[in-house]
Amino acid sequence: MDRYVRQRVLRQIGDEGQEKLKNSKVAVVGLGALGTLTAELLVRAGVGKITLVDKDVGDMVDLHRQVLFEERDIAQKKVVVAREKLQRINRNVQIDVIDDFLRDGNSIMLNDCDLILDCTDNMRARHAINNFCASSDKKWVHAAASGVTGNVLVVDNPEVFAKLFGGAANLDSCEEIGVMNSLTTMISSLQVTEAIKILTGNEYCKDLIRFNAWENKYELIKIYGNI
Image (cartoon, helix red, strand yellow):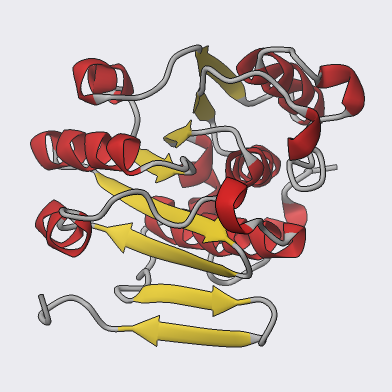
């Protein structure tokens, strides 16, 4: 039985799209709530190679939303635990790990990837991704979630992201305002959907996607051409 049969029958993907996913190489930067969910969905979708980037260890306060981890994973390296569990989900996917925080000085380690997914929680790493993609002509997908609101944006023009967030400090942090665990699931799903569109050669969303989980409010905010 073909494990991807329910995906192949989708007219948006088909056999050709599934083959493109198999041949794709994606980096997931950050293994918090968004990163673990996003990585798992990519693994289940059959993306051929996934590179996980993070230097943190598991923490009890993360377990309410970081669904890939359990109590026994506390104080363990996230990249190591995530690779082991994701490999058990799909042994046909190549999973590489980088036990480090991303910054301008080491972003070259993403050079082999076709697409970068931002699942971080700080602007320094996001600007490192943006700078790298500007110099390497790659797309990346920004995602952020805190409180009850999250954003997703496909960045195919790094100048737009730089203008939008160039002077911004970190977005609201989970430590300061908390985060609803159902929100991170929604935002991760939106991020992976846009990633699959890109990897399979389909048209992707050009707008900033904003979702408020508490109010069930979904917005598309036009930014290209308005900066």
